[in-house]
Length: 250
Image: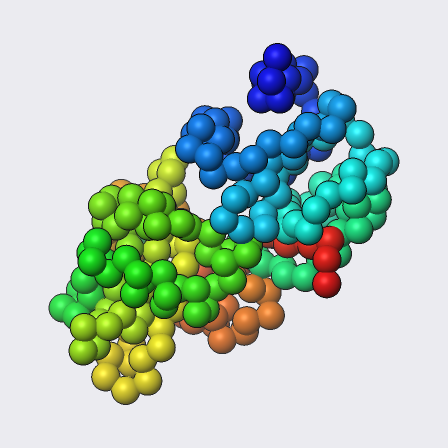
């Protein structure tokens, strides 16, 4: 029996802690496409992302140092007591928090989004320009973890919007849709002169494309007051959900 078969058997019985939030089908697909490597330590299972430092775990023992390689983990929770469940694992395995995000949401009720003629869908020929643009704002180790195949899929699904100047991407927005909710995953703009309202324009087109969504959601760095104010002006409000990142290296 290989490690993944062992994992599936243990999964049926349940684990004390886990930090994978995308569902079992997603986990299987990533493993089959070689985007993850799996390490088993007794009845504990660790899935390492190949193109980043992200680590997903399913563990039965919380009071144990697993001697993990340099990794970054993400935890999503609503209440502080949920985070306390991870306290021993974090301490035994030398993880320290370094980034914290808050979730904001907007109910799709009375929105009247505006169309801007300079916003367009990203194209396949924009692939490298798009990745260079996003990774100049978002860390590839734990935030912008899309590889080229992921980006191609999102471009084909028309889930990436952009604004160009002289043929180069100067602002972009990436989103995803699930369970009646449209999630704004990434947005950035480097435009200072022409199309200074590119961020606002991208947000409006995000609303236009997802008019059937019940809610719009996003995570924003809790220390980024400028971004928080931008979303609040658009009607977003903070809720109780937090996203935190921890690492076991300096």
